[in-house]
Length: 410
Ligand code: PLP
Image 1: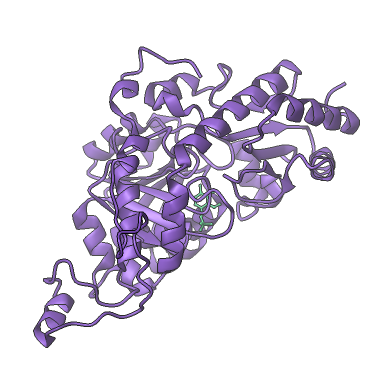
Image 2: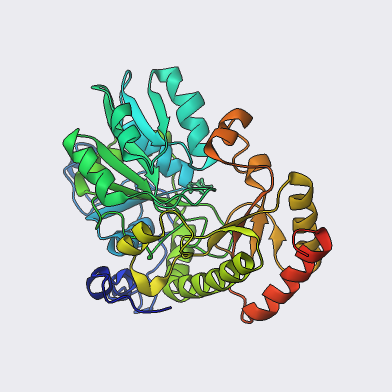
Protein backbone atom coordinates (compact mmCIF):
# COMPACT_ATOMS: atom_id res chain seq x y z
CA UNK A 1 0.00 0.00 0.00
CA UNK A 2 1.47 3.38 -0.98
CA UNK A 3 1.76 6.19 1.52
CA UNK A 4 -0.35 9.13 0.37
CA UNK A 5 1.44 12.30 1.45
CA UNK A 6 -1.57 14.47 0.57
CA UNK A 7 -3.73 12.65 3.06
CA UNK A 8 -3.34 14.49 6.36
CA UNK A 9 -5.20 11.70 8.18
CA UNK A 10 -2.05 9.65 7.65
CA UNK A 11 -0.06 11.70 10.08
CA UNK A 12 -2.56 12.16 12.82
CA UNK A 13 -5.04 9.37 12.93
CA UNK A 14 -3.70 5.98 13.85
CA UNK A 15 -6.68 4.38 15.54
CA UNK A 16 -4.82 1.09 16.09
CA UNK A 17 -2.29 2.99 18.26
CA UNK A 18 -5.15 4.22 20.40
CA UNK A 19 -6.23 0.63 21.03
CA UNK A 20 -2.66 -0.47 21.73
CA UNK A 21 -2.05 2.41 24.15
CA UNK A 22 -4.70 1.13 26.55
CA UNK A 23 -3.29 -0.87 29.44
CA UNK A 24 -5.38 -3.42 31.31
CA UNK A 25 -4.45 -5.60 34.27
CA UNK A 26 -6.39 -8.64 35.40
CA UNK A 27 -7.32 -9.31 39.01
CA UNK A 28 -4.10 -11.26 39.77
CA UNK A 29 -1.85 -9.22 37.54
CA UNK A 30 -3.06 -11.06 34.45
CA UNK A 31 -2.26 -9.42 31.12
CA UNK A 32 -5.90 -9.69 30.15
CA UNK A 33 -8.59 -8.04 32.26
CA UNK A 34 -10.49 -10.48 34.45
CA UNK A 35 -13.88 -11.56 33.17
CA UNK A 36 -16.76 -10.39 35.35
CA UNK A 37 -18.75 -13.61 35.46
CA UNK A 38 -21.76 -12.22 37.33
CA UNK A 39 -25.20 -11.08 36.30
CA UNK A 40 -25.74 -9.04 39.45
CA UNK A 41 -23.52 -6.99 41.78
CA UNK A 42 -23.59 -6.35 45.52
CA UNK A 43 -23.79 -2.98 47.23
CA UNK A 44 -22.26 -2.29 50.64
CA UNK A 45 -25.05 0.12 51.43
CA UNK A 46 -28.71 0.26 50.38
CA UNK A 47 -28.32 4.00 49.81
CA UNK A 48 -25.72 3.41 47.04
CA UNK A 49 -28.12 1.02 45.32
CA UNK A 50 -30.82 3.70 45.40
CA UNK A 51 -28.32 6.26 44.01
CA UNK A 52 -27.48 3.86 41.21
CA UNK A 53 -31.12 3.75 40.09
CA UNK A 54 -31.15 7.54 40.21
CA UNK A 55 -28.08 7.57 37.95
CA UNK A 56 -25.80 8.98 40.66
CA UNK A 57 -23.47 6.12 41.56
CA UNK A 58 -20.51 6.53 39.21
CA UNK A 59 -18.24 3.47 39.02
CA UNK A 60 -20.79 1.04 40.49
CA UNK A 61 -22.24 -1.97 38.73
CA UNK A 62 -25.87 -2.92 39.13
CA UNK A 63 -27.01 -5.70 36.84
CA UNK A 64 -25.42 -7.19 33.72
CA UNK A 65 -28.14 -5.90 31.36
CA UNK A 66 -27.07 -2.37 32.35
CA UNK A 67 -23.37 -3.05 31.84
CA UNK A 68 -20.48 -5.13 33.20
CA UNK A 69 -16.76 -4.45 33.70
CA UNK A 70 -15.97 -6.73 30.73
CA UNK A 71 -18.39 -4.87 28.45
CA UNK A 72 -16.92 -1.56 29.62
CA UNK A 73 -13.36 -2.69 28.77
CA UNK A 74 -14.42 -3.62 25.25
CA UNK A 75 -16.43 -0.40 24.90
CA UNK A 76 -13.42 1.62 26.07
CA UNK A 77 -11.19 0.05 23.40
CA UNK A 78 -13.75 0.61 20.65
CA UNK A 79 -14.32 4.22 21.75
CA UNK A 80 -10.53 4.73 21.60
CA UNK A 81 -10.48 3.28 18.10
CA UNK A 82 -13.29 5.57 16.90
CA UNK A 83 -12.14 8.62 18.86
CA UNK A 84 -15.44 9.02 20.75
CA UNK A 85 -15.91 9.79 24.43
CA UNK A 86 -17.29 6.34 25.18
CA UNK A 87 -19.20 3.39 23.74
CA UNK A 88 -21.84 0.79 24.57
CA UNK A 89 -21.54 -2.78 23.33
CA UNK A 90 -24.58 -4.90 22.55
CA UNK A 91 -25.53 -8.45 21.64
CA UNK A 92 -25.58 -7.78 17.88
CA UNK A 93 -25.12 -5.05 15.30
CA UNK A 94 -28.90 -4.86 14.94
CA UNK A 95 -29.14 -4.49 18.74
CA UNK A 96 -26.99 -1.36 18.42
CA UNK A 97 -28.73 0.03 15.33
CA UNK A 98 -32.29 -0.39 16.60
CA UNK A 99 -31.50 1.00 20.06
CA UNK A 100 -29.81 4.10 18.61
CA UNK A 101 -32.69 4.80 16.22
CA UNK A 102 -35.26 4.28 18.96
CA UNK A 103 -33.31 6.51 21.33
CA UNK A 104 -32.99 9.35 18.84
CA UNK A 105 -36.52 9.23 17.42
CA UNK A 106 -39.94 9.65 18.95
CA UNK A 107 -43.29 9.01 17.27
CA UNK A 108 -43.86 11.22 14.19
CA UNK A 109 -40.16 11.80 13.64
CA UNK A 110 -38.60 11.29 10.24
CA UNK A 111 -35.33 9.66 9.18
CA UNK A 112 -33.35 10.28 6.00
CA UNK A 113 -31.38 7.14 5.17
CA UNK A 114 -29.14 5.92 2.43
CA UNK A 115 -31.10 3.48 0.26
CA UNK A 116 -28.16 1.09 0.04
CA UNK A 117 -27.74 -0.21 3.56
CA UNK A 118 -27.70 -3.63 5.21
CA UNK A 119 -31.01 -5.44 4.51
CA UNK A 120 -31.88 -5.79 8.21
CA UNK A 121 -31.49 -2.05 8.85
CA UNK A 122 -33.53 -1.34 5.72
CA UNK A 123 -36.28 -3.72 6.88
CA UNK A 124 -36.33 -2.12 10.34
CA UNK A 125 -36.71 1.40 8.94
CA UNK A 126 -39.08 0.42 6.13
CA UNK A 127 -41.35 -2.10 7.87
CA UNK A 128 -40.98 -1.86 11.64
CA UNK A 129 -40.42 1.82 12.49
CA UNK A 130 -43.63 2.98 10.69
CA UNK A 131 -45.61 0.91 13.25
CA UNK A 132 -44.64 3.61 15.74
CA UNK A 133 -45.01 6.38 13.20
CA UNK A 134 -41.35 6.87 12.46
CA UNK A 135 -41.03 7.16 8.70
CA UNK A 136 -37.96 7.08 6.50
CA UNK A 137 -37.05 8.58 3.14
CA UNK A 138 -34.49 6.42 1.37
CA UNK A 139 -32.11 8.42 -0.82
CA UNK A 140 -29.05 8.07 -3.00
CA UNK A 141 -26.51 9.04 -0.34
CA UNK A 142 -23.94 10.02 -2.97
CA UNK A 143 -26.29 12.74 -4.27
CA UNK A 144 -26.08 15.46 -1.61
CA UNK A 145 -28.82 17.50 -3.27
CA UNK A 146 -31.32 14.66 -2.99
CA UNK A 147 -30.25 14.07 0.61
CA UNK A 148 -30.97 17.70 1.49
CA UNK A 149 -34.23 17.70 -0.48
CA UNK A 150 -35.50 14.76 1.60
CA UNK A 151 -34.98 16.59 4.93
CA UNK A 152 -38.23 17.86 6.47
CA UNK A 153 -38.92 19.77 9.70
CA UNK A 154 -39.65 16.38 11.29
CA UNK A 155 -36.27 14.85 10.37
CA UNK A 156 -34.08 14.01 13.35
CA UNK A 157 -31.60 11.46 11.98
CA UNK A 158 -29.42 11.19 8.89
CA UNK A 159 -28.34 7.54 8.55
CA UNK A 160 -25.77 5.89 6.31
CA UNK A 161 -22.99 3.32 6.08
CA UNK A 162 -19.46 4.60 5.35
CA UNK A 163 -19.20 1.95 2.63
CA UNK A 164 -22.59 0.56 1.86
CA UNK A 165 -23.74 -3.01 2.00
CA UNK A 166 -23.74 -4.49 -0.63
CA UNK A 167 -23.08 -1.91 -3.37
CA UNK A 168 -19.95 -0.39 -1.80
CA UNK A 169 -21.18 3.16 -2.30
CA UNK A 170 -19.07 5.60 -0.33
CA UNK A 171 -20.69 8.23 1.92
CA UNK A 172 -19.05 11.66 1.79
CA UNK A 173 -19.06 11.92 5.60
CA UNK A 174 -17.68 15.49 5.94
CA UNK A 175 -20.32 16.85 3.54
CA UNK A 176 -23.11 14.85 5.19
CA UNK A 177 -21.91 16.13 8.59
CA UNK A 178 -22.23 19.71 7.33
CA UNK A 179 -25.78 19.00 6.16
CA UNK A 180 -26.63 17.37 9.48
CA UNK A 181 -25.30 20.37 11.39
CA UNK A 182 -27.17 22.84 9.17
CA UNK A 183 -30.49 21.05 9.79
CA UNK A 184 -29.80 20.08 13.40
CA UNK A 185 -29.83 16.32 12.73
CA UNK A 186 -27.77 13.53 14.24
CA UNK A 187 -25.50 11.88 11.67
CA UNK A 188 -25.36 8.16 12.43
CA UNK A 189 -22.76 6.15 10.48
CA UNK A 190 -22.52 2.36 10.38
CA UNK A 191 -18.78 1.74 9.88
CA UNK A 192 -18.95 -2.08 9.79
CA UNK A 193 -17.29 -2.39 6.36
CA UNK A 194 -14.36 -0.07 7.09
CA UNK A 195 -13.05 -0.29 10.67
CA UNK A 196 -9.69 1.56 11.05
CA UNK A 197 -9.70 2.62 7.37
CA UNK A 198 -12.37 5.25 8.03
CA UNK A 199 -12.93 7.15 11.27
CA UNK A 200 -16.43 8.65 10.89
CA UNK A 201 -16.37 10.63 14.14
CA UNK A 202 -13.14 12.39 13.09
CA UNK A 203 -14.92 13.29 9.85
CA UNK A 204 -17.94 14.80 11.62
CA UNK A 205 -20.35 11.94 12.43
CA UNK A 206 -22.20 12.14 15.75
CA UNK A 207 -22.60 8.41 16.35
CA UNK A 208 -20.62 5.48 14.94
CA UNK A 209 -22.00 1.95 14.92
CA UNK A 210 -20.35 -1.38 14.13
CA UNK A 211 -21.55 -4.90 13.79
CA UNK A 212 -18.71 -6.51 15.77
CA UNK A 213 -19.76 -9.79 14.16
CA UNK A 214 -17.65 -8.89 11.12
CA UNK A 215 -14.04 -7.65 10.79
CA UNK A 216 -13.66 -6.46 14.38
CA UNK A 217 -14.17 -9.88 15.94
CA UNK A 218 -12.92 -11.54 12.78
CA UNK A 219 -13.49 -15.18 13.67
CA UNK A 220 -17.17 -15.68 12.72
CA UNK A 221 -17.94 -17.21 16.10
CA UNK A 222 -20.31 -14.62 17.56
CA UNK A 223 -22.63 -11.72 16.85
CA UNK A 224 -22.07 -8.39 18.58
CA UNK A 225 -22.48 -4.66 18.13
CA UNK A 226 -21.29 -1.31 19.43
CA UNK A 227 -22.48 2.29 19.56
CA UNK A 228 -19.66 4.85 19.87
CA UNK A 229 -20.68 8.37 20.89
CA UNK A 230 -20.74 11.01 23.57
CA UNK A 231 -21.04 10.16 27.25
CA UNK A 232 -24.45 11.85 27.20
CA UNK A 233 -25.70 9.66 24.33
CA UNK A 234 -24.40 6.43 25.85
CA UNK A 235 -25.81 7.34 29.29
CA UNK A 236 -29.18 7.93 27.67
CA UNK A 237 -29.05 4.50 25.95
CA UNK A 238 -28.28 2.86 29.30
CA UNK A 239 -30.79 4.81 31.37
CA UNK A 240 -32.90 2.55 33.60
CA UNK A 241 -35.80 4.96 33.04
CA UNK A 242 -35.97 5.25 29.25
CA UNK A 243 -32.77 3.88 27.73
CA UNK A 244 -33.35 1.78 24.60
CA UNK A 245 -30.24 -0.38 25.18
CA UNK A 246 -31.26 -1.08 28.79
CA UNK A 247 -34.95 -1.62 28.07
CA UNK A 248 -34.78 -3.61 24.82
CA UNK A 249 -32.14 -5.78 26.45
CA UNK A 250 -29.79 -6.69 23.58
CA UNK A 251 -26.99 -7.15 26.09
CA UNK A 252 -23.60 -8.62 25.31
CA UNK A 253 -22.39 -11.36 27.63
CA UNK A 254 -19.19 -10.65 29.59
CA UNK A 255 -17.39 -13.75 28.36
CA UNK A 256 -18.07 -12.73 24.75
CA UNK A 257 -16.95 -9.16 25.42
CA UNK A 258 -13.70 -10.50 26.78
CA UNK A 259 -13.07 -12.72 23.73
CA UNK A 260 -13.90 -9.91 21.25
CA UNK A 261 -11.45 -7.60 23.06
CA UNK A 262 -8.69 -10.17 22.55
CA UNK A 263 -9.47 -10.39 18.82
CA UNK A 264 -9.64 -6.59 18.48
CA UNK A 265 -5.91 -6.38 19.24
CA UNK A 266 -4.98 -7.96 15.90
CA UNK A 267 -7.49 -5.98 13.86
CA UNK A 268 -4.86 -3.66 12.31
CA UNK A 269 -2.81 -6.59 11.01
CA UNK A 270 -5.87 -8.34 9.66
CA UNK A 271 -7.33 -5.24 7.98
CA UNK A 272 -4.05 -4.50 6.20
CA UNK A 273 -3.98 -8.06 4.82
CA UNK A 274 -7.68 -8.04 3.87
CA UNK A 275 -7.04 -4.74 2.03
CA UNK A 276 -3.91 -5.93 0.22
CA UNK A 277 -5.61 -9.12 -0.93
CA UNK A 278 -8.80 -7.35 -2.03
CA UNK A 279 -6.82 -4.72 -3.96
CA UNK A 280 -4.80 -7.43 -5.72
CA UNK A 281 -7.88 -9.40 -6.77
CA UNK A 282 -9.91 -6.30 -7.74
CA UNK A 283 -7.15 -5.09 -10.07
CA UNK A 284 -6.71 -8.54 -11.63
CA UNK A 285 -10.45 -9.12 -12.13
CA UNK A 286 -10.89 -5.64 -13.63
CA UNK A 287 -7.99 -6.27 -16.04
CA UNK A 288 -9.64 -9.57 -17.02
CA UNK A 289 -12.75 -7.60 -18.06
CA UNK A 290 -14.92 -8.60 -15.07
CA UNK A 291 -17.24 -5.83 -13.83
CA UNK A 292 -15.57 -5.15 -10.48
CA UNK A 293 -16.45 -2.65 -7.77
CA UNK A 294 -13.81 -1.86 -5.12
CA UNK A 295 -13.20 1.56 -3.54
CA UNK A 296 -9.47 1.16 -4.17
CA UNK A 297 -9.95 1.05 -7.94
CA UNK A 298 -9.71 4.35 -9.82
CA UNK A 299 -12.87 3.29 -11.69
CA UNK A 300 -14.91 3.44 -8.45
CA UNK A 301 -17.09 6.58 -8.68
CA UNK A 302 -16.12 7.63 -5.14
CA UNK A 303 -12.47 6.53 -5.19
CA UNK A 304 -11.25 10.10 -4.64
CA UNK A 305 -13.69 10.76 -1.80
CA UNK A 306 -12.66 7.51 -0.08
CA UNK A 307 -8.98 8.48 -0.44
CA UNK A 308 -9.61 11.90 1.05
CA UNK A 309 -11.31 10.32 4.10
CA UNK A 310 -9.20 7.22 4.72
CA UNK A 311 -6.48 6.44 7.24
CA UNK A 312 -4.39 5.16 4.37
CA UNK A 313 -2.12 2.69 6.18
CA UNK A 314 -5.12 0.34 6.57
CA UNK A 315 -6.08 0.36 2.89
CA UNK A 316 -9.44 0.28 1.15
CA UNK A 317 -10.83 -2.67 3.09
CA UNK A 318 -11.70 -6.26 2.32
CA UNK A 319 -15.05 -5.91 0.55
CA UNK A 320 -15.52 -6.06 -3.21
CA UNK A 321 -18.21 -7.05 -5.67
CA UNK A 322 -18.21 -8.50 -9.16
CA UNK A 323 -21.11 -8.76 -11.55
CA UNK A 324 -21.16 -11.99 -13.54
CA UNK A 325 -24.33 -11.20 -15.51
CA UNK A 326 -27.02 -13.42 -14.04
CA UNK A 327 -27.98 -15.40 -10.95
CA UNK A 328 -27.35 -18.78 -12.57
CA UNK A 329 -23.72 -17.91 -13.30
CA UNK A 330 -23.34 -16.30 -9.87
CA UNK A 331 -24.61 -19.44 -8.12
CA UNK A 332 -22.50 -21.72 -10.35
CA UNK A 333 -19.36 -19.72 -9.67
CA UNK A 334 -19.91 -19.57 -5.91
CA UNK A 335 -20.58 -23.30 -5.68
CA UNK A 336 -17.47 -24.08 -7.72
CA UNK A 337 -15.26 -21.72 -5.68
CA UNK A 338 -16.45 -23.39 -2.49
CA UNK A 339 -15.75 -26.84 -3.97
CA UNK A 340 -12.23 -25.67 -4.82
CA UNK A 341 -11.79 -24.50 -1.20
CA UNK A 342 -11.39 -20.84 -2.20
CA UNK A 343 -13.83 -19.70 0.47
CA UNK A 344 -17.34 -20.31 1.76
CA UNK A 345 -20.71 -19.62 0.17
CA UNK A 346 -21.90 -17.81 3.28
CA UNK A 347 -23.27 -14.45 4.35
CA UNK A 348 -21.32 -12.20 6.73
CA UNK A 349 -17.81 -10.80 6.37
CA UNK A 350 -14.45 -10.31 7.99
CA UNK A 351 -13.50 -13.99 8.30
CA UNK A 352 -9.97 -15.37 7.65
CA UNK A 353 -11.37 -17.28 4.67
CA UNK A 354 -13.06 -15.51 1.78
CA UNK A 355 -16.86 -15.43 2.06
CA UNK A 356 -19.15 -14.87 -0.92
CA UNK A 357 -22.88 -14.51 -1.44
CA UNK A 358 -25.32 -13.08 -3.96
CA UNK A 359 -26.90 -10.25 -1.98
CA UNK A 360 -30.05 -9.91 -4.13
CA UNK A 361 -31.22 -13.33 -2.96
CA UNK A 362 -29.65 -13.29 0.52
CA UNK A 363 -28.53 -10.38 2.72
CA UNK A 364 -30.53 -7.79 0.76
CA UNK A 365 -33.57 -9.96 0.00
CA UNK A 366 -35.57 -7.79 2.45
CA UNK A 367 -35.36 -5.06 -0.21
CA UNK A 368 -38.18 -5.49 -2.79
CA UNK A 369 -36.99 -6.48 -6.27
CA UNK A 370 -38.06 -3.24 -8.00
CA UNK A 371 -36.14 -1.21 -5.41
CA UNK A 372 -33.12 -3.48 -5.81
CA UNK A 373 -33.20 -2.71 -9.53
CA UNK A 374 -33.51 1.04 -8.93
CA UNK A 375 -30.45 1.06 -6.70
CA UNK A 376 -28.45 -1.03 -9.17
CA UNK A 377 -28.47 -4.30 -7.24
CA UNK A 378 -28.39 -6.85 -10.05
CA UNK A 379 -29.02 -10.62 -10.04
CA UNK A 380 -25.48 -11.44 -11.09
CA UNK A 381 -23.83 -9.47 -8.29
CA UNK A 382 -21.53 -11.43 -5.97
CA UNK A 383 -20.31 -9.81 -2.78
CA UNK A 384 -16.89 -10.94 -1.60
CA UNK A 385 -15.35 -10.52 1.81
CA UNK A 386 -11.76 -11.26 0.87
CA UNK A 387 -9.88 -13.44 3.34
CA UNK A 388 -6.39 -13.37 4.79
CA UNK A 389 -4.92 -15.74 2.16
CA UNK A 390 -1.15 -15.95 2.45
CA UNK A 391 -0.66 -16.49 -1.29
CA UNK A 392 -3.18 -14.30 -3.06
CA UNK A 393 -1.62 -14.92 -6.47
CA UNK A 394 -2.41 -18.62 -6.11
CA UNK A 395 -5.96 -17.74 -5.04
CA UNK A 396 -6.36 -15.49 -8.07
CA UNK A 397 -5.17 -18.18 -10.48
CA UNK A 398 -7.63 -20.69 -9.02
CA UNK A 399 -10.50 -18.16 -9.05
CA UNK A 400 -9.71 -17.32 -12.66
CA UNK A 401 -9.96 -21.01 -13.59
CA UNK A 402 -13.38 -21.17 -11.89
CA UNK A 403 -14.53 -18.08 -13.80
CA UNK A 404 -13.36 -19.61 -17.07
CA UNK A 405 -15.21 -22.87 -16.34
CA UNK A 406 -18.47 -21.01 -15.60
CA UNK A 407 -18.04 -18.80 -18.69
CA UNK A 408 -17.61 -15.49 -16.85
CA UNK A 409 -14.37 -14.88 -18.76
CA UNK A 410 -12.88 -16.65 -21.74
N1 PLP B 1 -24.52 -3.37 9.55
C1 PLP B 1 -23.97 -3.94 8.46
C2 PLP B 1 -23.26 -3.09 7.44
C3 PLP B 1 -24.08 -5.34 8.28
O1 PLP B 1 -23.53 -5.90 7.19
C4 PLP B 1 -24.76 -6.11 9.25
C5 PLP B 1 -24.91 -7.57 9.12
O2 PLP B 1 -24.68 -8.16 8.11
C6 PLP B 1 -25.32 -5.46 10.35
C7 PLP B 1 -25.16 -4.10 10.47
C8 PLP B 1 -26.07 -6.23 11.40
O3 PLP B 1 -25.18 -6.80 12.28
P1 PLP B 1 -25.50 -8.12 13.16
O4 PLP B 1 -25.70 -9.23 12.20
O5 PLP B 1 -24.31 -8.23 14.03
O6 PLP B 1 -26.77 -7.82 13.93
